Amino acid sequence: MQKETGFEIRPEQRQSWLSIAAVWAGGMICVPCLMIGGVLSQGGLSLWEIVISILIGYGLICLYMIFVGMQACDTGLPVAVMAEGALGKQGARYIISVLLTIACVGWFGIQSATCGQAFAAMAADMLGLGEASPAMVVVSSIAWGVIMLVTACAGFKGLKWLNYLAVPLLVAVCLYGLIAGIVRNDGASAIAAYAPAQSAGMVFGISMVVASFALGGVISADYCRFAKSRADVVKSSIAGVIPAGLFMLLTGALMSIVTGQYDISAILASLGVPLFGLIALVLATWTTNVTNAY
Image (cartoon, rainbow, N blue to C red; front, side):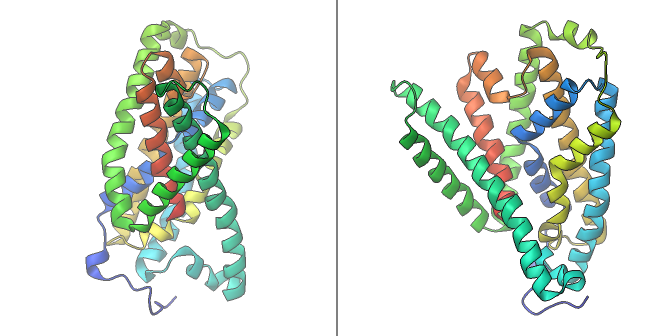
C-alpha cells in the first residue's frame, strides 16, 4: 500500500514506544475492566484460570494489533484509509464509520454520562443539596464530555501527557482501594478460601477478555502510525496492554471476591474517602474517553 498525500508522518511527529504504550495503558485502566474481572470471578473461574484467560485473551488482541500497527507505521495511514485496500473506498467509508460510531462514539457517551452522574452526586453532597437533580447530571455530563473532547483535540501530545500523569495515579488509587478492602474485610482469608464449585470455563474467560478490548486492536493504526519502527509497535502494544489489563482485571476479580463488588469508586467511598473514589472514576473515564474520541 502506497503512502497517500496528507498522511505522511514527519520525523518530528514520531513518538517513542513508551508514549504509545502509555496511551494504551490509559485506555485499559477503566471501571469496565474492573467489571470484567468481577465477572470472571463470579463466573466461577479459579484465580489461575483468571490469570491464564487474561494472558491468552490480551495476547490474541496484541497479535493482530501488532500486525495492524506495523502496517500503519510503514504507511502512516489511519485505520479508515488502510481499510480501503480490503473494503474499497465506499466500503471503508461506511463500514468503518459505522463501526467506529457505534463503538467509540457510543462508548464515549456512556462513559461521559457515568462520569457526569458521579461528579454531580459528589458535588451535590459537598454543597449540602442532598441528591443531584437531573439537570445537574446533564450539565455535568456535557461539561466533562467537552473537557475530554478538548483534550483529544490537543492531538497525540495531549493524550501522551494526560496518560503520563493519570496512569501512575490510577494504579496507586486502585492498589490503595484493593489493599484497604482486603484489610478491612479480612480479605486474605476470603482469597485463600476462594474455591469455586463450578467454573464457566476458560473459553468463557478468554471470550470476556477479548471482548473487553477488541476495538483497541482495530483502531491501533491510528496510534501506531506515529511509532518510530516496527519494533516500537511490538513493544508499545505488549507493554501497554498486557500488564495494565492483567492488573485491572485481576484487581476487579480480587475486589469482587473480597468485597462483593468491583467498583473502585464505591469501595473507596465505603472506606470514608469518597473524594479519592471520584478522582479515580474521573481519571479512569478521562483516559479511556480521549482514546475513543481521538
